[in-house]
Image (cartoon, rainbow, N blue to C red; front, side, top):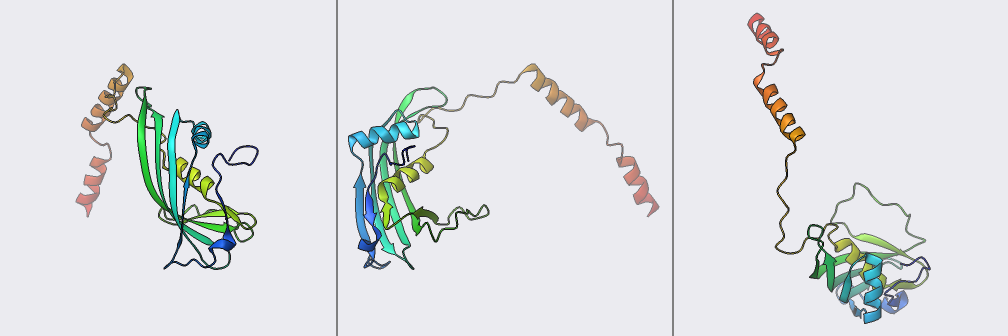
Length: 191
């Protein structure tokens, strides 16, 4: 979300319109970013370009005003290779599950010891959840922080003279006898 509090890609949905939806019969909603929204998303995420972003949701209400959402997101975008600094095209397809929880019911804490597969809680105010903003947040979580252009391998490590000296010292240490080995043998012989 921008500093002004307005999302680059906002698709608000009233929670009360989802009350008839259930796990067996979820409500399906698809959201697609416009060209202008894609440009704003690219700026927000620091990407050269976002050509498209679409997310299909299956939504249903749980206890109270909590809404569970299963999303299927696809995005076409450009990234900057960290090794070659070349821009390359990428396609991302990701499935995720999140829970929209009223801010009044969300304690604001995050379980640091939680499992990675647990469902993320997204707090919301009032009676509106934002499916566009949720898609942008999931896209940001999906992006590789160190993207590499397909087919580009990491360069082989180059050893400096200091690295070689350190390896030689470690090799010598392995060859030197352990000064406590003789004490250990004496202790065993006394037993």
